[in-house]
Image 1 (cartoon, rainbow, N blue to C red):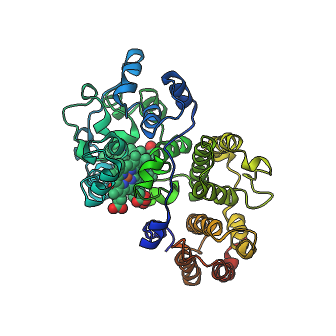
Image 2: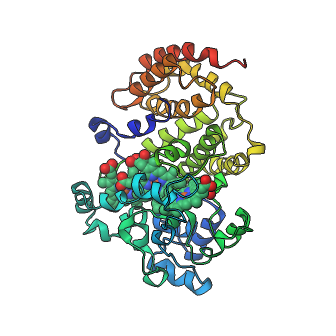
Image 3: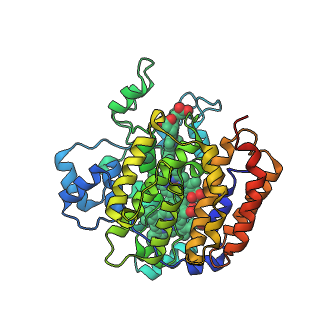
Length: 420
Ligand code: HEC
Ligand code: HEC
Ligand code: HEC
């Protein structure tokens, strides 16, 4: 079934893991970040700094001295303060967020536990950073409370709880009491300091901070490649809210933000990393595949990293507003299903085509469920699963086979592309 693929897909074959050997650093270019970078006099901020600027919560000691001088940063109170059964620790849909997070979410105990595994130990050995559970280079994403100074942590905060409510919703000190007031609207809570995760742009920026760019040195030491896709990953998370936005919109905003991040990273490299360049070109391709795609960036500006970074940031902000979101899922699926010729183009390297296939199947996975009836159609499902299988391993990627299977997919989905 669509929606299930992403998890399967992110478990790369050992052969592929060996081959994916370069990576990127964690960056996000929002105005806040630029400001904080300037303030800190940083040329190349590390992931830690980005997170700090994004959320004012992942503060490392160096940054802290600067920031605490200017703002009184609110405290983190810990997930315990959200956990009572009458608040978010209940069973019903309205009150089960803590329950979902603590029993099903990848972010609960797992990220910290991962740092205690043999694999993390090996990574730490290569990087010569000692115990990974105590290194900010790992905890900044895997156990973010560990990088928050003690005076900003409530006494119930447990570092082992990985990525907790406030890692995404923002430190609760200033809004914990008021957010339950019946006369409070979402905007009032945001004004009190809760992060505006209903805004897809803000949401994408929150997740991408830990899910796309990683220090190339950590990547080279054997850390898995990170791939950001907001909609699929929200389902896998699993989500603990009622979603009102369409998958297509969430997918687009997430992919635009991912493209922005990769462009930022490349714009800072003296000689652009080949793997990252291919990953980024593949993403640019999928977003601007057709001339009349709303995200089409006509050449030659496509390869100007600074310019594409700015364009994709604009797209992401603009398309986060449902009223301004111009994409028709059926048309997009139609274009993509018809992209077979791309995969028989001898001028494009197989490794680059493998990256396009990777993005293409992730896109179909999110867009097909938007076509009424398509996601439950056995022929559509079967042909989509085949495409996933084809794109699973980069070194084994066979463009010709993929082109053929894309044709099969096209015929299976064709009946769902026309308005009934
Ligand atoms: C503070 C950093 C951080 C933030 C913010 C964050 N994550 Fe994660 N996430 C992680 C880490 C670290 C893991 C890896 C867990 C492990 O396997 O150890 C993870 C794992 C996941 C997984 C399971 C692995 C995968 O990629 O399929 C999903 C899905 C996921 N996150 C989705 C999201 C979404 C959606 C958001 C935003 C709403 C988000 N995350 C925000 C750090 C973060
Ligand atoms: C930029 C954020 C970030 C940083 C920094 C980071 N990680 Fe991760 N790590 C992640 C995310 C996200 C995943 C999940 C990837 C997925 O499943 O797709 C992950 C996955 C892993 C995994 C694989 C887990 C599994 O079983 O699949 C290991 C091991 C790991 N990280 C260890 C480390 C160590 C050790 C460090 C420090 C040297 C570190 N990480 C630094 C974000 C990060
Ligand atoms: C990885 C990021 C992340 C973590 C961790 C997280 N949330 Fe959320 N949460 C979100 C996003 C994204 C939304 C959707 C935006 C919204 O509705 O505000 C959301 C929505 C919610 C909502 C609104 C539900 C609805 O249907 O309107 C509540 C309540 C909530 N979260 C509580 C919690 C609690 C309590 C925890 C900790 C136990 C938690 N969240 C942990 C990202 C996260």
